Length: 86
Image 1 (cartoon, rainbow, N blue to C red):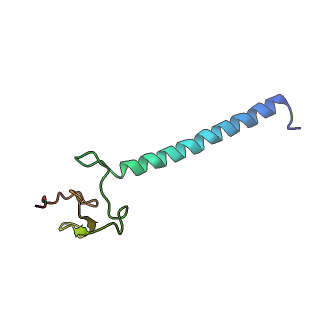
Image 2 (cartoon, rainbow, N blue to C red):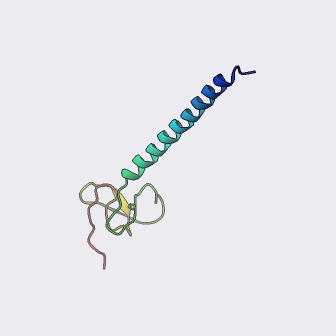
Image 3 (cartoon, rainbow, N blue to C red):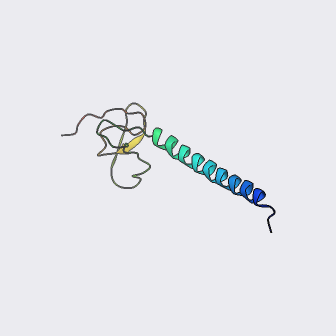
């Protein structure tokens, strides 16, 4: 149906190489995404305003003028450390 056994082995090898290639591309994209969100000092991945949109009060960073959640200890955009609140 598909030809000789050698042809079928070559086709199978191409499929396997293609699957490995697609997997590598997906994993590298995931790795790049994780690297673009470095961990803060407390070990969390950062508290971004985008992921918490509409979930309560926010504070404006004096350095980059972007909003972060009110409970954040660091600006999610530039890393500025907020002063602790009373």
